[in-house]
Amino acid sequence: MKKYLGLFLLLSLVGCQVTETIEINDDGSGKIEVLQLRDEQSYMQLARENYSKEEKFEDSTFIFKDFITKYSETFSKLTPAEKIVFQKFENVEVHIKKNSYEKDFRTTLTQNFSKIEEVPDVYKTEEYADDLEHNYALSAEEHYYKVSYSFDRRIFKRIVKITDSIELKKHQDKISEMKNKYSNFKINQPFTLKYHFPRKIKSVSNTNAKISADTKSVELQFLISDCLQNPEITNLEVVLE
Picture 1: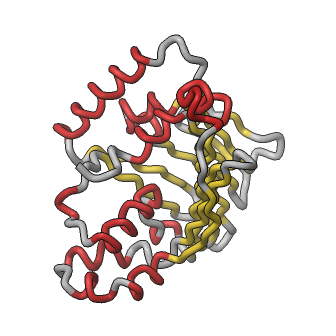
Picture 2 (picture 1 turned 60 degrees about the horizontal axis):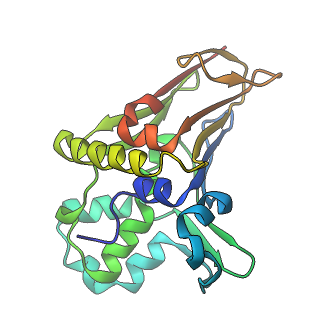
């Protein structure tokens, strides 16, 4: 099995905060940022005595297309369909910081876009980079859902689709086991959506969403473990005036 059991499952296991921020301009262009931040209080409970023993120091940044260039030999051997998958991630920038001394562990994924339909499922960026580096086959992936977006200047959609129902069931069982195992721990694992629009918001499909005072931004929060068990709960439609 590859080192990734599924990005969100790993994050929820160690106690993490994930924030997905999207800013959209009037012409449809904008920027997406996904911040994955280790919650130290949560991780300390899980790591116990090993918490003070860890020695990790990394501060690196890369753009995915640099990985394609660096591992061009591996990339050249891919099928045309596989190449298209990787090329969608070309403009995603990844910043990884792991500092045991400062207890600062975070990964930031960013991409500027001319239209949001260009944005890939950025949560898979590190995994695909790992595939190129180690020459893993895409067929070995354990993905069971896909995230995409659309915006027609009036309606914004965050679209989550289940791509493998069998794999989903496997992860649901694993997550249930994890929840039982750590039920007595105080684990902080928020998954937050923060979206900013060029015009006022008329309506939001999820009634738990909080609209800002100027009605141009919306925020919605879930638990990572809930998102893993039912990814489609993060589907969202925002209608602008």
